[in-house]
Image (cartoon, rainbow, N blue to C red; front, side, top):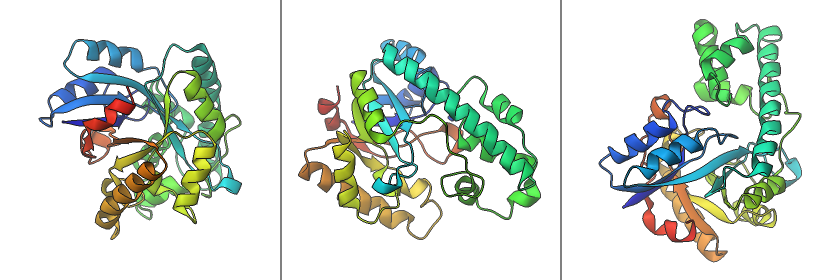
Length: 293
């Protein structure tokens, strides 16, 4: 049996509702035993997700994926932390995420202004807000509107290049006024009874991967996302490295997890029809559950 502990819903930047994720996993013919909803900086979908899971023969785990503040001295750049088995009714978690959401919204407003005023793209924050609805606004929403409104200009870039333009180091990036650093994020997840997992560790550009993991451990990381869909995700998708990194990173981070007694996790980073990824594509073994539940 398999599990998938990294899924996104319409409550962040996925295309399926929280309850639909349960249905899709059950109907995948992959014998999936457990799934986790890990929306970006959001827990709004967890109640529906858990309620639907109670009605079906599948384990539904409450989670979140938190974007971490840029800390160049620790090589922390666009790092994400997954929190698994969290108490989504934790007041500290809820109150902190409200501040986090406000910072995210203000950042996206300013990015839209820069794209429009400095680079000549046709884009407004209201369009991004309408696309996202009441859900957490993310970079995929901005990229989607950029491509839709600026077809001629957008052809000059790959989708990954558009993402990089509005990411840290990109020419249209804006830092958030409120954002948790790595230690603060791991402490917040721990305060809500959750397990802190370093998401997709192979995508980060660091000088020494082993040293980076040790630094993350000092900040409270308890586990690694060992299995992940590197071949189908940025920055390796559609590159010559895609198939090679898939096997390499799985073996490498499995070895580090075992060496340093870290909890093993994994997931597809499923976003629905927005990516060529299916629930279960990371082939995560269900034996990992014993250290997560």
